Length: 170
Image 1 (cartoon, rainbow, N blue to C red):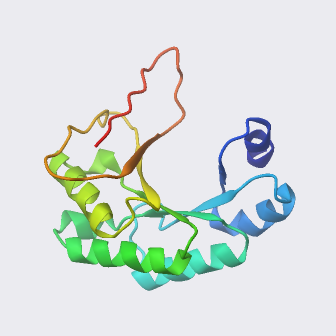
Image 2: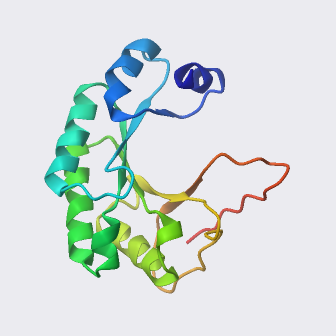
């Protein structure tokens, strides 16, 4: 059903759980880009596990990888770990699209800004996006100071009649 809807609505891709990537890839027969999420939901897997997951998903037909950052490492202030992990995942996916998911509902304003800087440091500004799940209590991020150039995407199902979707350029 997800694949059929994605094809019907001509979405850029359809995000499938890793265990179904191969089946979805075979089902869409080139009509749709297959995406999957690595490290869901809190990014607690080791970097090596995430790299294996990404490589396995690519072997099974994924053309886009969404990765969840290690939220615990960020919360502990281990930004080098988070940066290293993003770089390792980007190396694993090569020229394919890598999107970095931060769970904004779990982060402070300062941590959100730090993640924008880390993604930029990782060299993903042109090659990927920072996915910004919109959940209650995380409606916006104020523009940080300094040169940060990344693409941000608000990610959720939005009832247009009841919600206003705002995009902010960082």
